[in-house]
View 1: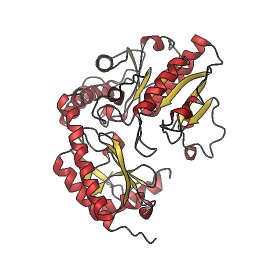
View 2: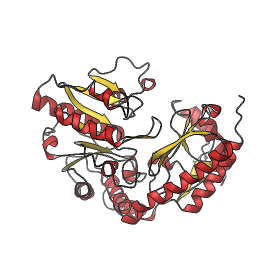
View 3: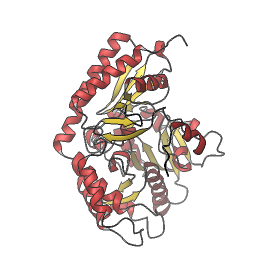
Length: 404
């Protein structure tokens, strides 16, 4: 079929729940992308914190190519070697004793929430079903996870939300104390809120949640779908905070661009998920697990993890330079290479306009709400790409129309 799809074809053939940028990327290498017209872009978005080793990293390409010539799919009627290798690697590198594989972060969080309720049901009784989460959080797009996420815009118009879910204020321990009680089965929190504005958790807040969970026989769930697998400079963010959860969810960077999610937990909690309680057709797929193993082994190298802080410092330096020039940011925050630059009142709600302006300059980045620019690049992005990309951002911000 001799046909080259265009951006206009998206509107014709696909549901309107997305609004992609005008360009259609067709090739990537490292932190660079090229579109259908051969135009080149620097990638500060990383597929929303997914492409942690950039595009087409040789280790991931080799893992996919090799596994693709051996075994693609079995289902969970059987296990497979790539899944077992990846599970062992994650267990040995973390607090966890057991791993469940899924296809996405939303599925990993769905599994975590079901596990927490099943654990409380089996150990304490059906009354213990309350889930405490936080406003502006984001845990996925399944009906359960979007309800636990603290953003009403994602549940509006879809009917009554599941019961037993309450929301406190992020980084406000007193708010959590008012909600957690003997009926609480789980406290779910992002160590760094991503979609909610790129806000790092306060260490005392996360430590306080751990104590509350212990005091009320509840499970502490860390959603590290966006901030995990090297993004903060540790393999998982909980390691830098010194607060260990009972359940941890992982995805995005875990596969370096290949769809995979994982839920990690302890033996004590895992034992309630007996045969038949939960499952996934593609979870633990050999292709996904082979690529994820290569990603985790590469990202977990000391030089890669140490390089995160070095690159983050350059991003912040450049953002401060841009702010000094335009007086555009009210706050620059984040952890590692998950960085948010919040526009001030003068640049109010210029986030999406900046994305479009940046594309014209040859730069791809993200937003986290209407006022926050979000940066989630490759963890190994070269310094020259950072500085060149920031020059493009500088030029893009200079074109914004603040009068409209």
